[in-house]
Length: 194
Image 1 (spheres, rainbow, N blue to C red):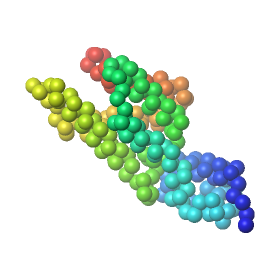
Image 2 (cartoon, rainbow, N blue to C red):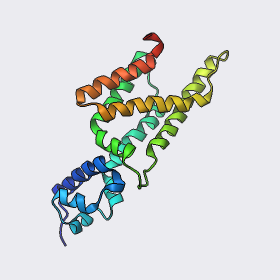
Image 3 (spheres, helix red, strand yellow):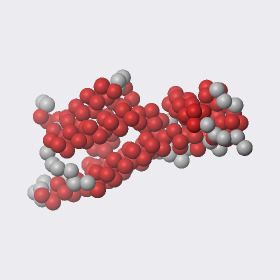
């Protein structure tokens, strides 16, 4: 019995990530990934039984980290004010710096996988999270409550801007700067800029 080698596994994952990022899952082939990794196709299948298992290995950490952000925020009581915005900006910046490629694959290259529609599901999950904040706001502003339906456009608008930074930022420093500024502007309110 041959032993699987960690160096080969890392090479396969790296080349699969590059391929899924360029072509998406649907247009990627195990044959191309094997060739890029310098292994025989049969050997690739010893490491990953199928293309979806390879896709999951490439994107699992990004998926867990992004979806965990909402759960983590719901479980924590973060102090209010400027510290909240700084923490949100810091966490989102780190997520992009550490998981950029995996996140982009999930968002834009997951058609044909069990994660297809991830972006839409994440919008919905984030909208539900926003509803909890709207409900808190409405309890203290009975004279002018906000409609829960505004949670969906707020979710899409905020996340699409964040995803745009993820797609276009060219360096870790730019990711950090743009993400922190973006979150800051969102939370202080656009009205303060005009």
